[in-house]
Length: 379
Image 1: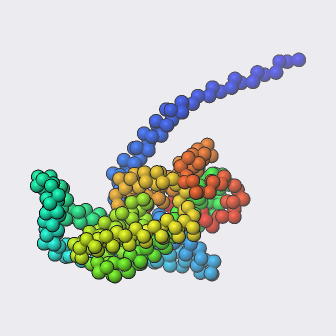
Image 2 (image 1 turned 30 degrees about the horizontal axis):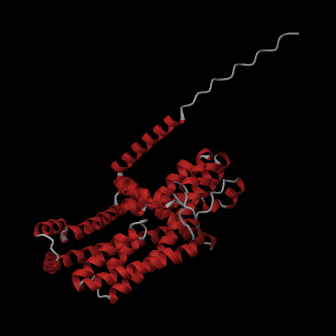
């Protein structure tokens, strides 16, 4: 009986130590972040167009379910987004022009306020040199100039409106056929398809929640500022609406300018009333009502949310601060959720109130095909 052929020796397996993999991954992330920072003028509008496409995707799907042709539904969605962008750009530009004409009128008031503070401190035994050092560190022009610079940079995003509109147009057209393509792709890569679907759902939910409650808070703030006779209440309402998308510190950014202007225009009592009113409004809507209605719309821990804010603000500037949560959800979908071996990290980075991550399932892919969103378009 002839000898059976010998089985080929098993191929030698070789893998890098986990520590080396972590270091290489960290180095790659740093290089990627640096590249995005260097091309922020292009990356920022691209990410903004992506998020806006996802934001209006429910409207496009609703129109299609109502019998509207897909191309017409996509066109209506694009028109809605462009109208919103133009409205925000016009309101921001007009408000900045009014702020620029208003600031010089408060120089005398600010000088008198500084003298009052100097006298108050001197009466309590604080030396003139210490007082002068403190007062030199605070300048009205610098304080409000920072705000004006930040808003101007944000307005500069809209200078690329033509580029953004073109991106929105192509993304809207691609969205019509993307669902069927994602269903086909899910047969080969169910993990990636599930991760992108989760990103689209999470981003849509976050944007809807932030927009609704941001609009409510902004309107209430405007009403309070009118009652307290604070100048430019609609500018500060617009600022409150925009900063509502900035996690953790957005409330403080939206509070400081109207509080300072209230101090200059109406004195210390107005300053205190603005701070108290903003704190109460923020606590009631953001800490009591919103969590009870929608729960955790993000699913990221507080620490990771703050670090995301710092990271994306450095990468993309003010626009990165506003888009920090959606961009973090996109990075999480591509780097963690798409790979079953790294999905366990979600338990470490999710907030305690977030529902546990559901593993991808092919039946889910079929049932939720209309919710899938592309990395460059949304359905």
